[in-house]
Figure (cartoon, rainbow, N blue to C red):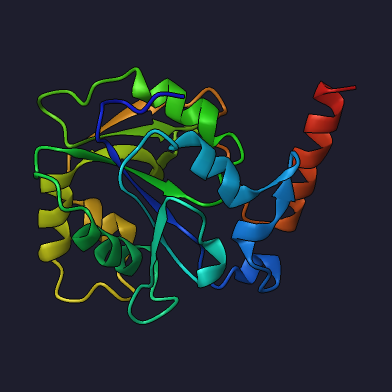
Length: 198
C-alpha cells in the first residue's frame, strides 16, 4: 500500500467501551490472523505520523498513542486529542480510520486513488446501503481542525455535528469499508473468509 501522498498523516481511533462486544477490547479482536487494529496499521504504514487514540495496548513501533480526555469521551474527543500531534500544514491530509476495519488495506488503496476535489474537504467511503462511513476516509487538515474548534465541547459530541461544516466527497467502498462492531458481524466475517479460502 502506498499512502495517497508523501507525508499523509493517519489518525486511528482505537475504540471506545465496545458495549456491543460486551466490553471486549475491539482493537484486539483477531480476524484473518491479526488483531483488527493491526489490519488498519498495515493499511497506513506509509503514512507519517501515525497517531492512534486509545489505551496503551494499541501501541506499536512507529505509532504515537494519545488518549482522549476524558477516556471513552467518544470519537470527536479522540480526533481532538490526535490533531495536535499532526504538526504539518493545514494544506496537508490525514486518514481518519476506525480500528474495526478488517479490509482497511483494500479501503485505503481504493480511496488513495481519489484526490479530494477542490470543492470538498474529504474523501470518505459510502457503503452499498448508502451510509457514509465518516471514520473511513481522508480529510484535509485545515477544515478538520476548524470543525473541531467550532465545538464548545468535544467529549460526547456527535460525528454528525463535527462534520456538518465539511463538504464530503463519498466514494463507493465496494465492500472494503465493512466494520466489525458486533459479535455477529465478526463471526459472519470470519466465516466468509473461511469460505473464500476453502
